[in-house]
Length: 64
Image (cartoon, rainbow, N blue to C red):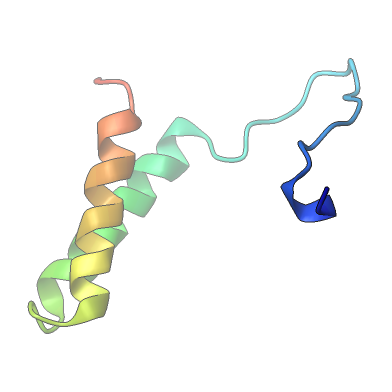
């Protein structure tokens, strides 16, 4: 079997871990992505990608 196709296994520490992003940081990232998608060339690949990522992340955040 190909090593890259094998499932990832491992052990995890029992100690509490910090989240990758706080809720405030995630909301700021969405705000900035929306800003860049709206201020750039609206038809560019980057603007469309920024908009798609912002809406995806925003949809995962809890409402206020």
